[in-house]
Image (cartoon, rainbow, N blue to C red; front, top):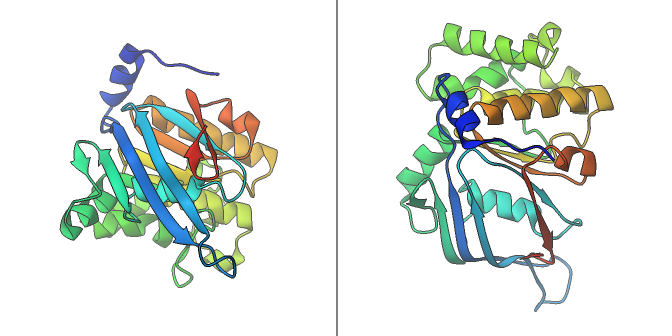
Length: 243
């Protein structure tokens, strides 16, 4: 398992990247009713206490249905906790106003969803550049940044393709590039290598490590022990609880 010293993290952040954010969860619970099941049955996460340091690289593992995606969604402010404190970069997301959460999602966090969620009407560069333009960047600069990310993933030739003409693995890599276009200080990735071949998966993991070495806090959900081995720490969930 790889490790980084504090001086290495500080050196990485000085290269223009925002410092990664620290995360603190206390007694966090988010419940969901189980579809087509016992009316009293619930899924989600329960009484989660978790500290993640700024600039850390953490893998979340556990069986399907253990609450991994729910935990990511709560940290990303895509979902509200039912109880407990969710503090990211000094802001309690569980009680923050909607305007604060909107700025947080735009300026601080990048998310790679398991199903990529690309915009079908836009080509690859347009999908990647969109968050940068929404944050106020001009079209030319945003497109240049998008092409730089595509080149790092060896996907430069796909710049003008619509999402419907991409493989599942290509869509997932484009989704990662989109999550990185604004240089977030927190990156959350849900099974980012799940649909990739070994070579593409290795390139994606190398990019995650490079981003992390530049100061970004990275949290990734994975079922792959080989991917988790690149993390500084592995967090395991079972039935919505930390183990």
